Every structure is written in structure tokens, then in C-alpha cells.
Image (tube, rainbow, N blue to C red; front, side, top):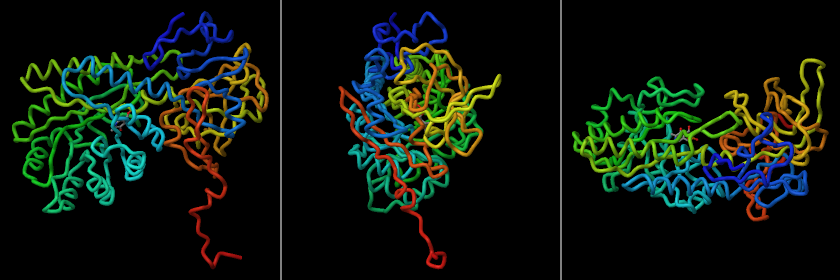
Length: 466
Ligand code: PLP
């Protein structure tokens, strides 16, 4: 059987599939949900990036984020190559680092030629420290602070201006002798897409971006400010989107903005269509491939520019999830369980909503395998419970697993995006470590937090001391 991995790379699956993954049975977990390098060795054990997962947990502790470098690099390359193939103008893929911002991930993305989109001073600082070139960094945000704007301007990154308050602040900050500040304008396209309400941003009732009805005023204002060098327009319509049409509609609308900008004397040469391509979290998810998504957008932009007689803009996109989600899994250790006869069985792990807040926030659905029982028959359907003091702290409802025991290693798949980056210390759980694996080597990229780390920023006023 040959299947196409969400990153578009072909898996010749069967040689790696353990018995319990027999694709002839509909209930089997799907190898496409795992990183590209996932294999089963010694009959029962899961290996990623040439490293045995149970050994990684022994070495680095549990829970553990395991990032497969090959899967991440492959997705970066597919975006780059698809734009090269389908777009006749210049293009630049930016990694939306909100998906997972840390030094190592920024460095890998940059080494693949990607730029980085950041949404805060902290993300910007991390990208700069990772060695990302400032001319490939774009700062987003609907309420950037003065300090964040100053850091961006002084570092030479592009500011994606989101609202009037920000435009006025930028003009105020600008020094008369300085070079004009390089900005793009984020506009709300008024496009609906079918995704969770909280991760939908392109409809008119969104906290992000200028109202397109204010376009005339915005373009007039910007064109009259010598302190601002407006190079482009930006929009992002939402996340985990499976349909191509909303992004195609967006592309068409954006070319009209480009045309309109010319009437104000603005030389807009960049167009950023945002991110949003969905990924396969469960077997029934059916997103387009990276190549299909890129092709669909490029075709619309090229046709619309030809119709308007406009030169092709530099085309930017900023995927997050589709670059990194499938590249990472989270390994947990199974502990207690609770059987409620005829109702359900809870199996508890040593993490939960603090390392993966997506299920409790967005009702997101995940799949899991047991790293030390990859060939065991899947005989039970259980509820995977986190260890937090919160009834809603359920990572997976109806997980189909082999019989489990305390000490087994549960591997939740597709956790590269919006897991570590949204992690918290709820209940004062230290955040897990993360390793990057490649060719049998594992390197720590995020150290596990300690109890000392948890109280590092605490201050106990003298009068409260015993
Ligand atoms: N760009 C912007 C402005 C975003 O808000 C987001 C995420 O919501 C992204 C890019 C990345 O989206 P995704 O991870 O769905 O590709």
C-alpha cells in the first residue's frame, strides 16, 4: 500500500506497519498521522528519527515532545518547491512561529530558507537569537506595545500594521532622520471558512486587521506618511482549513486591494495570503496537500493579476500547523486508570491540558499509539485523562488502544503545532522537555522545567515570611 503523508511525501507504508495497523481494518490507527521516519522495530517498539521512543523517555523523562527533523524539513521544502513550481514571480514562505516558537525550530525553518512570522516581542527576540535574518521576519499582532514596535523597528523587521492605533503609534515613534518604517497592512477580507470559531480570523467580526470598508482612509493616510514605507497587504482567514475555495477567494480579493493601492500612489509589491492549511489529526481528516494548496492560490493570483494588468507581487504565505504539527509527537507515561462499568474506562497520563491545551480549548481530536506495544491488538476503547485538577482535562475521548498497564508509553500524534507554544504551568506542572531527533541522534531543544524554575519569578514579601 502506498499512501501520501500529510506533508505530501509518499510512504510505502506496509513495510513499517505493525499488525495492529493493518489498513484493511478501518479501526487501525493510520501511519500518516505519525512523522515520516516512524517505524516499528523489534516487533513492538516505536522508533522516530532512528531513536527508540521508550529509550528517549528513559533518557529525557516524561512527558516528552519528540520533534522529527526530517518531517519538518520535508514540509518546508514542499512549500518552497511548490511556490517555485507554480508561481512565476518571487515568493517567500514564512514559518508562523506561533505554532511552536523556540530557538531550534526557528533555526531549522530559517536553514530551509523560510522567513519567520512572529506575534510578540518574545517571539521576535527568539527568532533574532536563533539567527534569523531580520529582513525575513514579520511582526504581527492586534495590540503591539510601543516597546515591541521599537524592538521591531530597531531590528529592521517588517511590521504588519493591524489598526489605526498602531499606525498612529508608528508615526509617533518614527524619528525624522530614520529610514521609513517598512510596514504591511493587515486587512480583514470578510471571508468565512469552516473551522473552529476561535481559530477563524478572516470574517468581518474579527479582532484582527483593518475593516476593508476603511480601505480608502487607510491607503490615503499611509500614502501621506513619509515615515511609513508600505510594501504590502496581508490577510489570514483562519486555521485548520480543508477547503481550497476560501483561500482562492482571499487571493482574488487581495489582488483587488493591490490594484486599489496603486490609485493612492502606493507601490505595493508584496502580498501575504497568511496560513491556515489544515492537517490530518485523525483518519477521516482530508486536507489538500501542500502542493495542491499552493497551486490553487498561485493560479488565482496569476489569473487575477493578468486580468487587472498588474505585475505579479512577491507572494508570501505563513503556514504554521501544516509545517510542524505532524513532525512532533508527545510521549507520556501511563499511570492510574479507573473503570466505570458500562460507562467508560479512564486511563491517566502524566501530562494533559498544560502541555496540550487544544482539546479543552477547541475540542480538538487526537489519536495515540502505545510506543512499547505497537503490534499488540487494539482491544480497548478508553478515555485518556490528563492529571490536572479539571474534569475537562481529557486528551482523547474513545482512544482505541491495546491493553495498557502503568508504565506504558502513550504517544499522542500531531502535537507539533500549538502544543508547546500554548503550554502552561497550570497546577504548577513543570513544562516538559523537547528533543529533536534525526538519524538516530536525539538533541535536547527545550530543557524540562524544574520545581526551582516554577518559583524562580515568585517573590515572598518580607512581611509574609515566617
Ligand atoms: N498567520 C497568522 C496571522 C495567524 O494568526 C496564524 C494562526 O492562526 C497563522 C499565520 C498560521 O496559521 P496555521 O498554523 O493554521 O497555518
